[in-house]
Length: 266
Image 1 (cartoon, one colour):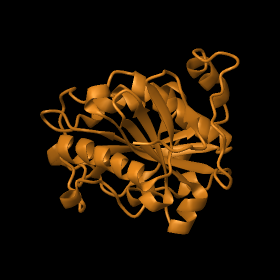
Image 2 (image 1 turned 90 degrees about the vertical axis):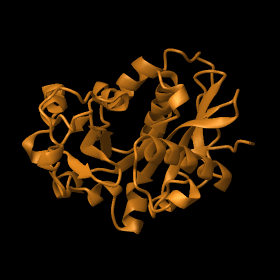
Image 3 (image 1 turned 120 degrees about the horizontal axis):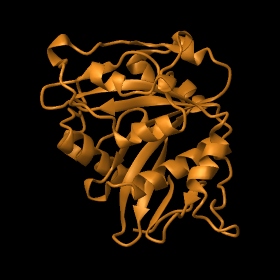
Image 4 (image 1 turned 120 degrees about the vertical axis):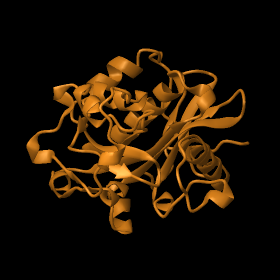
């Protein structure tokens, strides 16, 4: 499959590269990856199951950030990005389907929502997630956004959701102050809560925490995706320095990390 130029184009290795998909073929391939992860692996109930794709009304308003394996010619990592301006055209962020966000959205500045993040099961182990996160940070900084927001999903353990154990594992500095606490529209049912320490912190959420993301209150129960969602907020005012330290070490001084930007983007 021929790749297309994109506004963000990161090449941390010769095998993997990350860019915004702007062809229908690439977007459909990404939606097929989403379907395999969320429906086949996690058991999500999707209205688009008969098509073997995961998509919804938000997709046409989003940019689709993909990690591409040049050796095997396929998409192996993905996240979708919804700018505040595009969310305004749609009427809401996806997160507003699950949480009351009035306190957060009253903050001054510009918001970028991330969602549907997934990695091919055969590629989990760090490189794809690092590549994806590097490009995501570049996108956010180039777009001069002030906050990243989104829903971070945690799947249940064998006995259900160890909600208390998950929250005990979160460093206090990654818990939002009371002024930014949000309310879930659907709480985790008591029948699904368990006392055992079975649910860990997913790698993506750990990455968010390393960069200063905060969990803003109790989780929401997402029955369709069979998971509990934590609303996270990541202020970007100090991200530039942290990003440079973690992700720019591997680039030479003369390497062009960004591809040529397409007019009208970001």
